[in-house]
Length: 150
Image (cartoon, rainbow, N blue to C red; front, side, top):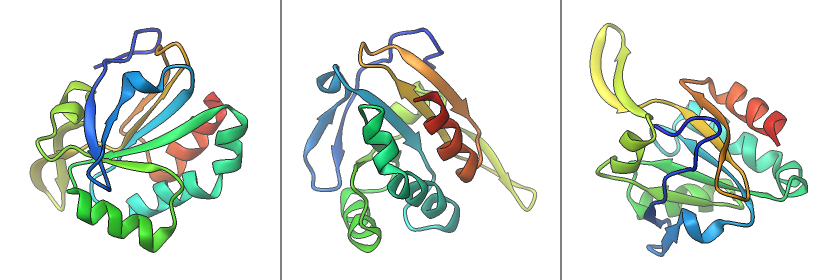
């Protein structure tokens, strides 16, 4: 799991249109990478819409946003179309990147334990170094803290 002050590990995943997005190709710009459990669910929509609604502040910080979940590209495309997100959503169905970044682990709902996405975000500097890391963060706090880190 990358920590503040460490170089963010590179990865390449498909976005909502089935196009490859490589983190390393975004050097020179800051990146807010947020991990969420499932497209179009209430908490995830709160988090993603928070980034959408504050996108002018993201751009003012010379940053872009990328969402990360195990959802397949067609589900991501539908969610973007429904909510008008100005950023890419990345598909990690085998949760390899989510695991490597510490955003996959044991969760519990109504006493039932399962493995899933741990809502998180990272702010990555233009040099590729992690500037902020929030693992197991609430949807609203994720947006607020990421913007504060910019």
